Image (cartoon, rainbow, N blue to C red; front, side, top):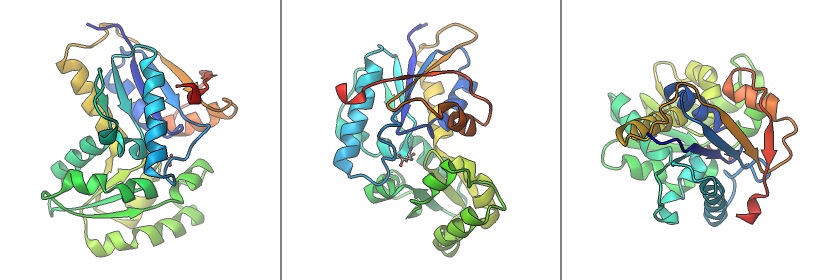
Length: 264
Ligand code: DGL
C-alpha cells in the first residue's frame, strides 16, 4: 500500500485523454495533473527546449513526493531517455504504444502519426525497429484544429487536412496506426473513416494501462476505493473547464491552480 499520489503531465490538456483511462483503471488513486498550458505546444519546438520543459515538469511533480509519474505527452516522452534516471518510476507513452501496436498488427506494417517533434525524434521507429515496418508522418495542424473544435466526422476542415496527411498511410498499407499524440484519440471517427479496417492505437491509454500494471505489480495501490484529481496549470486557468471537458469527454467542473513552472 502506498498513499502517495500519482503525477501525470502533458504539454497542455490533451494528456487528459490518458488521465481518463488511468482513473478508470485505478479509481482509488489520487492524482496530480500538470498541464503546461503556458508553453503549449511542445510539438514544434527543438529537442533541447522540449527536454528542458520536460525536466521542469518532472521536478514540479516530484515536489509533491508522488509515487510515480505518467508522461501523458508523446512529444515530452521522446526526450525521456536523454533525461537520465529517476528515483521513482517515470513512464512515457512511446514504448507502451509501440508494444500495443505490435500485438495488434497482422501484416507487420505499423503507421505512426504525431507532432513534428515526435516524428523528427524517430522514437517510435526505434521502439519498433526490427519488429515491424514503420512509416511516421507528422500532422502538425491536428492539434490546433482539435483545440478549436474541428474533430468530428463531417467537419470539412478536419476532413480536408486529414485526407492530405493520411494519404501516405493508405499507400503504405499499414493495418495498425499509432495515434502518437494526445489529441488524436478525438479524431478516431475521422481517421477511422479514411483508413477503414486499420486498428487505431491510443498511446495515452496504452501508457495508462502500463502504469496501472506497474502500480499493482509493485504493491503501490492506495488501498482506497475512490480518488481525486488536483489540476495545476502554467497559464491562467481561464477556459480550463471547457477544454478539459472536451478531452475528458464529460463535464469537468474542478478548478485548477496556477504554477510558475520556470521556478522548477
Ligand atoms: N501533447 C502533445 C503530444 O502528445 C501535443 C501538443 C503539443 O504539441 O504540445 O505530442
